[in-house]
Image (cartoon, rainbow, N blue to C red):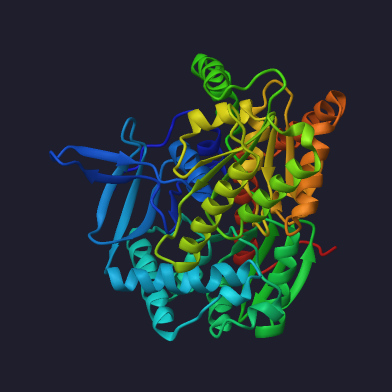
Length: 499
């Protein structure tokens, strides 16, 4: 495969400075692009939604390199993006039953609910574990075939925890980074995972591991110490773990978005025209208030509790009836899992019940959209919404919160944000929500709605400052710098001065 980086790219320059001659190799479960054939044999391209894809695709467009992903079915070798190719994608073809055990089974019926502290939903089956190991090994074998000694390998998320360990088994000696995007559970919860020690051992073969929050860093370090006897030392730039002669740096580096791109999209003529059109079609007058939720249809996002909170809001404040509109975008995901199908049914029933109870001629309290909305249109909805409601029960970070803030180029709007979302650590000027209590959700919405214009603008100004300080470029810089430091320490056998 060839590699054609973007000339003049800040990210490319940083990669060259820190890792001269290196190619960036990304491993993530999902491909950033899918190529399919239409009914007449024409080639069609799709861009799957998701936080990992949204964050990493812009980086690979700038730096070039290779992205390794997996899907059930036949393998594919792609050059993307199709309109202006700049990096390669290798999609591993996995037998359908094996992929189901790895992805639907171990990853999303086991690790996902457990890491979000929903232990009653977690199920671990030995057959799923076999499939999980098999697919992780396939990833490592494909990367080992491509990687040169100077290349930087960057592995992503809970589906691929064993890849660093397998890479070392295949003889890869170069730098390996790992980013764990979801929360890391407390040790007492992790002990419900039968294979937890093997997962930890696989991860600790990476030179650098990043998490979204300090809480996840502390939980991981605690697990490594208690389960494997790992020694740890805190330094100015994170924590170093020593296990079987190998050092691993661990740090909190919250992911972010392409702020400049979101702001540019929010200012286009298309955005202005669509704003006017939507206000007219949805009958949003000067007194109207639009609340917006944007989520994958996942039980960690707190959508039922959010809708219950909106219902309480309408009950408690009759003056909002006929004025307050709630738009909920709920993108289906993992529909092969029964819990997700039941969630979709529960959300639809709640929407119907609210509309029956409160709806009036000319006013539909809740609109539900159950499909993905492309970013160009989504930023217009962000601009249209007076209040964005992010009420996750538990989230690694939540990029929707950051997208909403970046899209508010007019400096207005209010963000209601769950205190249990990782993004809350950066976005403390949001109106806080306690997501499990519909009454508290309603209170948070009411605070955002009835706050003075001065308070709303002051909060948004603070939020926009926080988002602007930590962009996707900042995130990449911190990751690459951290990996470089970890690699240098690994080679020298030395550490920086502890604090």
